[in-house]
Length: 445
Image 1 (cartoon, one colour):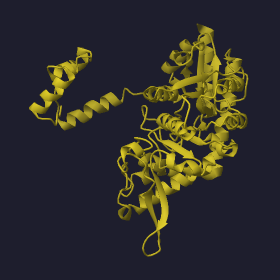
Image 2 (image 1 turned 135 degrees about the horizontal axis):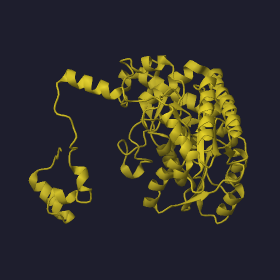
Image 3 (image 1 turned 90 degrees about the vertical axis):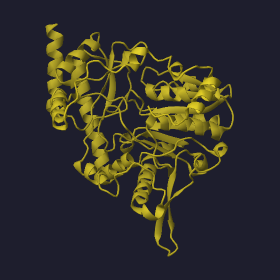
Image 4 (image 1 turned 60 degrees about the horizontal axis):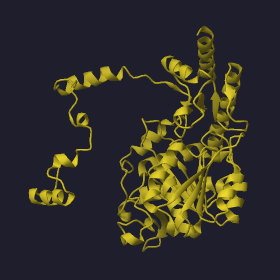
């Protein structure tokens, strides 16, 4: 452990904290966690270590994925890895020196432009850490836009993990989070939203489009309610779905955020991922993160540079809009390459294939004894019930399938339900084999 303080400074700090030693500083940690594992192998030479890890790697299994919940197993073109690995791009750090970073800055500018095109918003920033933190920052920004109120209304159809991130942000400001439940059709109860707004103490409305369960929320209605009560509308959007759905900007959304993992970033044990963030031009100075703008150099040639850097490193801390200190430049570049490779028609084809395959699988699962949770229309993600859902989920993992997400861990009352997702990567043969395994298991047990 590296401690930059002198012994005297350390004693002063501990004294101010009412502690006697550094050990006391970590007394709240389970002592067993501070001990090194006892089953580590003895030291090895470099070549021995390679063999050891190759052996361990052979124990890994790649499951055929029918799960989503915010991270999806989509096809990632090989060209993406090649381009983002080139020397001029292989960095996640910020290009402070514009004169030496025109390629990277141009790429970020193009990324911002494509996010604006997808969302139909005026301006987008250079990316965020991930979808969850992008939403939390959007909530804080909405509070700044509204300027008053201590309560926010959020749909129960927003990703539960994102809602947890928002909850960690709000207590420090003394704000309250109000969750609105879903209706039988899988969309948010608009009348409950109106009831919450009538008190006049709310500063934001947050919905997901499509929501966590895959159902398309009526954004036009929610936008009308938000405008009626003069509350900013924040939309968590699926970027692939925006290729076949009307974008949030068309409905008057004030802030649009989301996760860009689907756009050329493979699944990777939880990340890193990349959040996108877009808003109206009138709110640009309240937006977190940073922006790249196009200008001219002293010779009148096109040039790119960082603009509106509103974080505390660049301006007085009390004037900062956020403590977001960087962007996911490398992964945003992957998004950019993916969108350019596929184009609008290619992205639409990804969405349509996912949709078609999802409904094919759902029909087969209903025939196998599963039941619908909601009655509405969905895209490529949907929840289904079965009295033995957890059991089926575990069995299929042994058969080589990651079959949905058990919803009982995330939603009370859905202990017998699974959230299933299908992407363009899944083949008909994989779906048919999955159904065959399910039917065989249910018939023999």
